[in-house]
Length: 173
Image 1 (cartoon, rainbow, N blue to C red):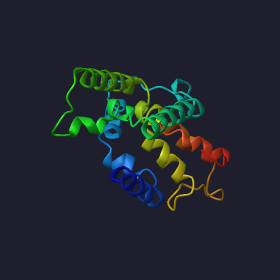
Image 2 (cartoon, rainbow, N blue to C red; image 1 turned 30 degrees about the vertical axis):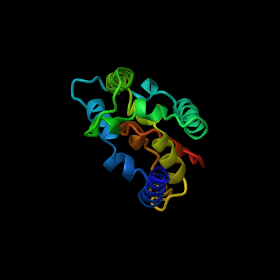
Image 3 (cartoon, helix red, strand yellow; image 1 turned 135 degrees about the horizontal axis):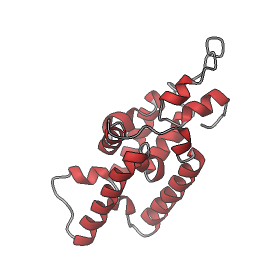
């Protein structure tokens, strides 16, 4: 089963090198990051960010619906919101597919101006899988309390919401 093989592949990569799949292989993640870092974009602060708890709940619900429909009805909603579908040589037939995919991608790209990786944090089932695996991954970030001065610079300069959780000592971040 190619789907299962891909899940295992992404899982092994995530256990070895955390978000390397998302950072290196996903065209959507890279594109969202580029848009978020455009120089004309007004730099926001942490208050402008959607709390990770909320975005993760949305992502868990979307993933649950994805797996429920995929394994019970054989329907893949992910095809309609998947950045990888843009890079296939053969686009599936059907105006509904193209319109839906186009609208989702435009919405995500516009949202990327204001939010850090909205597709990854709200919709991506692979992002959820890699997030779960990075909690136990070999290269997860750990805080060296002896050298940390608690200056909070790392929290302010990174768009990644997990840094704050790491500093607070949360088990799941």
